[in-house]
Length: 475
Image (cartoon, rainbow, N blue to C red; front, side):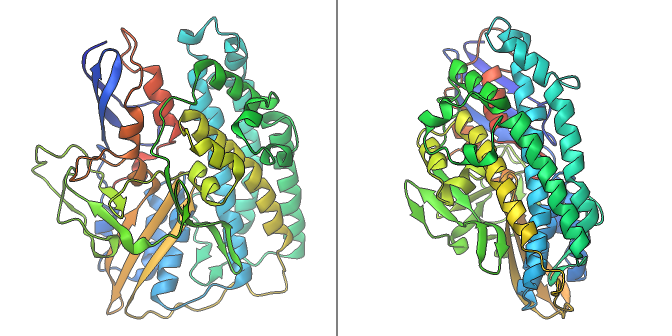
C-alpha cells in the first residue's frame, strides 16, 4: 500500500492487545494512532480496601513485571505510613527486582525481537541463514538456550521470593525471607552460571568488555555473539535511522538502596536534568476516560462508556511539564550517564533501544553480583510492622520497560485513591490536547510501508523496539 489507511494489529509476541491505525502517503507512515483496546480497571478495584491488600492485588496486573508492580506498591505504602525499609531488605528487594528485569531483557531480545529477522522477506540477506538457525520461533538454538538460562536464574526468585510471578516477599519494611550464608553462596553460584550464558551466547566476551564500549562506532565494530549478529543486521537494514525518537528520556531510578540507586533517576533532554514528579499530568483528551488533566495523585479512572469520537484509546497520555518522554532501558542508561547510551540517544531509533537493552543486560549482571556480595545474613531484613495512618504515598520504580509509578491515598485506614502510570502508558500514549503524538506514534512517522504489506516489517521493528506490555497500560 502506498496511499490510504491501514489498521495493524493485534501484534504477535506482544503482551496484551495492541492496534495501530496508520495513515500512509507515498509509501510511508504520515501519522499513527496507537490504541490500547483492553480496559481492565485495577485502579477501580482498590478504593475501599485495606491498603495492605494492594500488595496482593497489583502484582496481578501483569505476569511479566509483577515484581515491579509489587515493589512500587510497597514503596507507596511505606511512604504513606512513614516507614523506611531495612537496608539489607532493600538490597535483597533490589536483587529480586533486577532478576525479573534482566530476565525480561533476555526474553525480549531472543524470543520477541530477533525472530522478526527470520522472516522469508529477508531471505537472501547475508545474515538470514544464521538468524534462522538462532532465532526461529520454538526451534532456534538461541531460543532453547535462553529459556534454560532464564529458568536457572529464576531459581534465585524461588529462594528469595518464594515464587514468581506474584510474590509477596517485597514489603514496605523490606523482604520476608532473610537469606543465610549458604543462600548467599547459592545465589552467587547461580549468577556465575548466568554470566557464563551471557558471555558465551549473547556477547561472546566478558560482560565488562561490552559495558566498556563508549561510542556507536565502537559498538558497530562488535562482531561477537548474538549481539554481533544483531549489529550486523542493524547495519544492513539501517535500524539506526528507523523509528527515531524525540531524544527526551525519563527514569524514576532503578533499584533504590540506602546509598542511592543502582541506576540514577532523572531526565534527559540534550542534557541531564533533575526529576520533579509533581510536573507529571495525565491528559485525557484522546482517551476513553472522563475527567480533567491532572497529576496522578489527583487523577481518576472513570471510563467513558460512550467512547466519544475524538478519543481512540483507553490509554491516558502522561506528560511531564507538558512534554512527552521516552522510558525504558535506553532511558535508564542515558540518565545514569553511560557514554555509549548517550551517543546512541542522539539519533535514537530501533538500534539505540535494542543496544541500550543489551548494554543494560551487561551492566545489570555486574550490579546483581555486587548486590549478592553485599548480603549480610546477620543483619535485619525487615522493619515494621506496617502501622496504617492517613496519608499519601508515591512508589517510583523502574520496570524492564521503564518508569512505573504508583500513587496511593489512605483515609480512615482504607484506600481512598490509587493511580498507576506504567512504562507502556508513557511510550504508547495517544495524542494530548495540543495534538502532540505519543512517543511510539511519533517514532512511527516516516516508516516505510512496502506495496502489499498488511503488517509492515518496519512498523513491527519499531513497535517491538519499545517492548510493549499492553496489559500494564490501562488499569
